[in-house]
Image 1 (cartoon, helix red, strand yellow):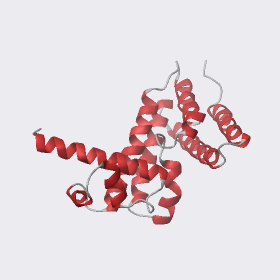
Image 2 (image 1 turned 180 degrees about the vertical axis):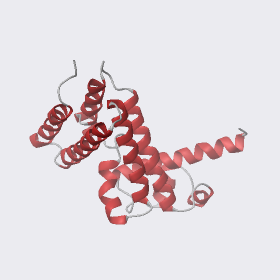
Image 3 (image 1 turned 60 degrees about the horizontal axis):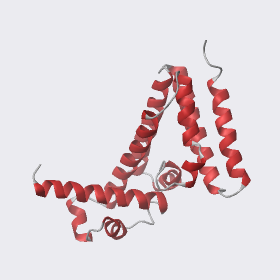
Length: 194
């Protein structure tokens, strides 16, 4: 890769990182191209050399941010059995650390309500990533129809519990929500197979 191509790639990565921070913190609508470029340390004029539109940028940002976070979470899952590894994923997703640091965590709680209002192209990006979440979690369990149903339920539980816990952060109910969702996940997966 020549120096010009390398610089263009670095600029693109800086734009995506800035967009990801704004996406998690403000959402799509409240984040302008000017804000994204300022956060990347670049001028607004350079934006269209990387992306066709704000929609294109945030569609790609939703996908890359969600995918990176989820793949990192799955790759570091600990445990001897599939059940233990899935519970480790659930435990870390529903942790105080994840709740208290949305700027580095899953973007779903920040973007899902807005995507529901805005529709396409964001809906397609979110659907693609959620499908990946379900497929990869089901594969960790065993990848049949029953495991897909368990994965769907666990992801819905994880998203809901994290979202509610963040909404009431700083209250005893916030920690309670995280603990209850982790316990319910254990019961949903049933006992460890002999």
